Length: 243
Image (cartoon, rainbow, N blue to C red; front, side, top):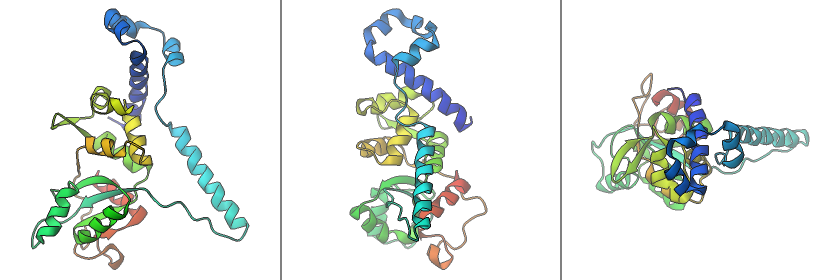
């Protein structure tokens, strides 16, 4: 199904779960009668997802405005450093050093074309440098994060791989961290929130398809015309081809 339609479902489910928290016992007693309540009542008494598309659009417009103001003053606006990475494994295990293999296992990149989100820090950067010939990575935007989770997202419950077709799966795994629907999960990953570690561990590594059009030279670095290494914002183009 299309991402837009699933987002609409997410908000309504998010609202219904928010109302259920305030009166859990009443919900059990009344049962189906909860679903018969008017939409106006549910809207007034239930919370919205962590961030809406309007808020993301406002942030983008603010960034554009800051760049324009800096340009008018003859200066430059330096965007804040990215906090989130998306890493995709692009090579197999042929002639791989044992340490490199171990790092890929720690990053949960056990198979070719597996992808994971990572928080940008010193430890992560050092690990990526050791495995750079075997991975492609960069800074994903909102569209990439949302499409990956909606289309390829699977959660981990009781060590089982469960598709994220129902917000109940997310609430069961991350409800204690106040992440109760798929939009909450997208927001936590995108902003690298306080519960990013729990949310990222809940997500099963993404199993992507081979990129449309194939890879150029996966043995060479991206800056040399290849595919490996850091491609910064251009990772979003690769995600489109593999999702």
